[in-house]
Length: 623
Image (cartoon, rainbow, N blue to C red; front, top):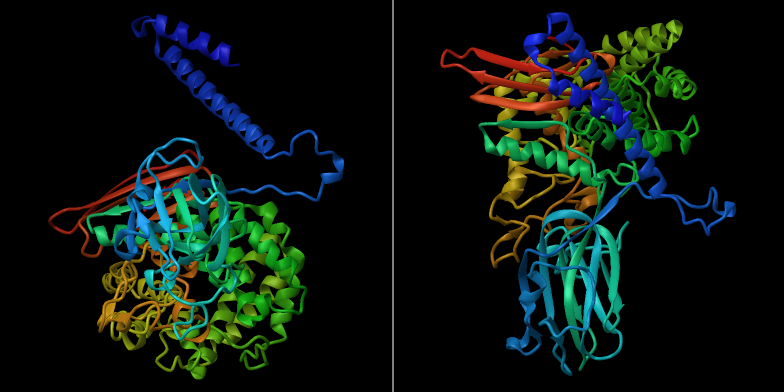
């Protein structure tokens, strides 16, 4: 096929366009298009074949290993530290040439050269330490490459990973709340003389290394971070004339990317689990940035398979509601009917279970695992009740959509009827922004009323990293795009101001008053933004600084500012409806199963917006 194509191209170049009529030119263009597509398919198939077979075991492993081995979909990249944050060198005699750890050209190989290396040397009562910064939060571990210098035996080191400087400098179990929960981030290891050690598996940006034994010497040629991630392209993009919003969009995308490990986690330090509520904002980010990725159905199926009904996913009734909503949105963006059909039995049984939790008047009676929206809303039980009423109505609406697609009209009718009964109930958000947002999205409260009376009050005050996404969605529904964008800039931008490279499990703008950021030791008289705040399960340093549920602004900016709305499942029809607010221009891309859509908007002096859209074949654009 390739030889035929090359011959065609050669003959094509020898022809003169002046000797061809219009039909000839059209025919040639059609042939070129067909051949280009064919070559692309062949190359894709070849690359896929090579990738799949590269994951296979060597031929010495026989059939007895079938079903007892599995491959890793992730890749590993080694990163050299960018700076030394802090060190204890005893005036220079305990730590020599530490700057060598920052040198370019690391290769992960110990050798017999006499090139200069970092030397750590202890005495009877003094021990060297060094704190390294890798510049960005990552998931993985570290590689320690030792040289021929120092003692000819193994040497014990203490390794401390930290999402912040203060965490890397902390002690397990002290008042700052540092832990080894879910991932070992503070431990002792032994490194060989003239060798390589790889250790650790956590989320971190900073690493502290302490030499523990007295009167020993260690030559450290390299300390490299092992960055473990899915090597996937960022098909979606967002750019505008506000660089702060650009950084927020990309930070949200990267936060979710880090959590796309073998399964999609909530956080890379903790909890490193598939939490269904957390998953919804992550799924929306995946759809707007990466398009289809197998980690989503893989994680959804895991949650389903380990949760036989009538059990609740993750032990929480509300998280089973999110499973339904996620499937509706995943089908809307990806259009994979065959995958949806695989959910029919579980979905149908779950919906029938939910019907039993609604009384004749339409009031929900969900039970099991606590009645949970998000952590900051927990004390406001009246507001949580209202939020769960709305969330269940939203889940039943999603269930009705899915059942209609699956051809179960009766179950779709029951979902709609039950949802309507629930929406007829009056529910008071009790000034809880989380509940007000859900009530607006479920059409149980006019969006403008919910925004004016609750959500917009105080700007980003009382926002949360998880439900902030739904607050933004409600503000969009109310038409309050300018304030929504201001809240994004203030709230998520506030984390960037504190040194974040990923978004956090929780955040409160009040924490920033007289607080030091995460990138330096905390000065005397300052609050520690990581160690001094947090609540519930994320007190102090247990607080995760990379949590996928905090990525909401990424998909929100793509949906509402870039203006991409999915009208037909599988993105076969898109509506482009930008809302620039105070922006002068915005441009970006959006991934669909048919290919990438490119979009650009420019605002004229009179306020009108001109739009340019380039879509692949099979995607209809409406404005």
